[in-house]
Image 1 (tube, helix red, strand yellow):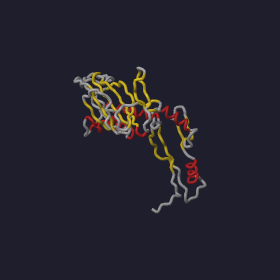
Image 2 (cartoon, one colour):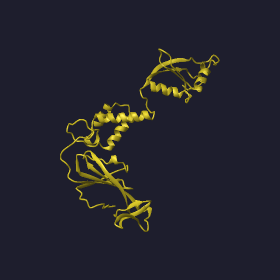
Image 3 (cartoon, one colour):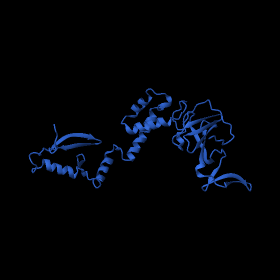
Image 4 (cartoon, helix red, strand yellow):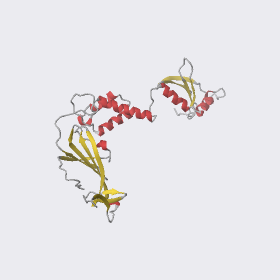
Length: 289
């Protein structure tokens, strides 16, 4: 479908793929930082390029009534399956307001039209939030690269410097992170998200102990949390099934053919605490070997 939306002189245009419809941050290019000006919605009916509007659930045409622009409902109303939404965004380049872009999206389409108006400036500029004035040009990082960094920070335990090194190996400027600082910022954001959803510890002993104390009344596995002067906090963890197995195999009344010795295993470093396990041999388990 070809949309003729206005008679503005276009200096250049391109059609890009957009799998996530409606996300403004996915409008990626290498022109620099853009300032959002405005945007609005309209509709088109089937292959008719005439721009229409929706009001109170009805498709309307803009007409001049009594000297005023008025949205007049079409008669008869078109079938809903033939009506497609058109969304347009206008942006100005921050370092040159005479250079603008217009982005047009059509509902049900996997791409968008990006039109550039004006003369692209020759001078470069930093991003508006940059604290370093080294004269380097700001170029927005490809959203796919941001998503890859976010996914790596979430699923791996690599440090930001290791992630940055892996991304820059055998990669060009368009497929790698801008710098190490960008990876560090995304890593900090991911850690904050994981802590907020309780998917990761805070590395704060006070917070972890408070969480353990709250689990005593909610979790059958956490049985006791004790605090003693001049001694590290102590937490006792077990289930009723585990306790019954200890009595069955290690108690004085256990038969000789299944009796086992209750022993203390090695101590593991878990987060800010140490975990000591008690173990025994389950002699009721039969093995062919």
